[in-house]
Amino acid sequence: MADNISLADKIVGSVTSTPTVDSVRKRSKESMAKSASGIMSRGVIDSGPDDMDMQGYISAYIDNIRDQRSPMTFDSYQAEDIDARVDAMNGQTQRRPSSDVTGGTYFTPSKDVTGLATLMSFISGGESYGGSLDAANRGTINDKIIGSTKVAERDGKKLSDMTLADIKKYQAIDDPNNPERLFAVGKFQMIPDTLLEAQNALGLSDDAVFDGDTQTQLGEYLFTGKANTRKTIDYLRGGDSSIDDAMYGLAREFASMPLPYNITKGNKKAGASYYDSGNAAKYGIDEVKSILRGVRGSLMEGNE
Image (cartoon, rainbow, N blue to C red; front, side, top):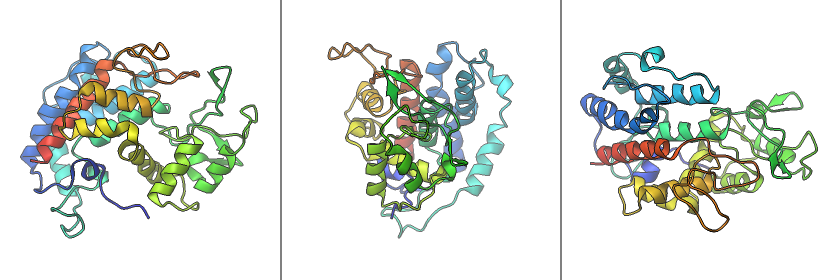
């Protein structure tokens, strides 16, 4: 059975001291605001005040570009006052006893103040129509993705209402011309082999429902349990891996993430998806780097 350790703990270990309101507020105003600078510098969204709500703003930004609307300003987002938001978050955050996790208390995934939740939301936003739990396609024909939809249903059920057994039954159909077939599914667009690997690694039952919680667990496995992202994790931990290494790892695992540099083999260009067959990167290099820098900074600060 899968554990209930937060994504932050999987990457940096448990937090040895409980962050205070002031430290969270500082991180919100400095680290997270800094991580938005690359996105804002591209002119896609307008710069906001120093105390901007980074996670909410990025979420709104993702929705904005997914819907291909015109550039928005921070004022149009109308974020709540940051002090009230942080105070509320501090009061609602749940903690588990130190005996549950070696080294002390930690924040549960539902109240992730490190920025990792923002990163995972950013990734899923590029993978699946802004992070749709029910997104799917049927695979490719002649290097074109077919049957791509934000909300897939089979036998009257959305994907997020199906069990893993149901999902795998439709993924077992080989012919992409078959309208019943499923290939890449959910907010992280998990293909058959990857879904099975993650399910087995996490110890999830076939009866587990493919809902938001299950998809989050599966996505965290892609992020922390795969060889592709080892250098991504090392970079976020403050290790010797470069930000380009971190980006390359994400691009190898998630088709919507751009390559940080040209790759001779296959003639792949910087900014493009690592994967062919109809896939395209959904974000720019500077956008991804700004998110990674912000998460690295917040993780290192939270682990001091």
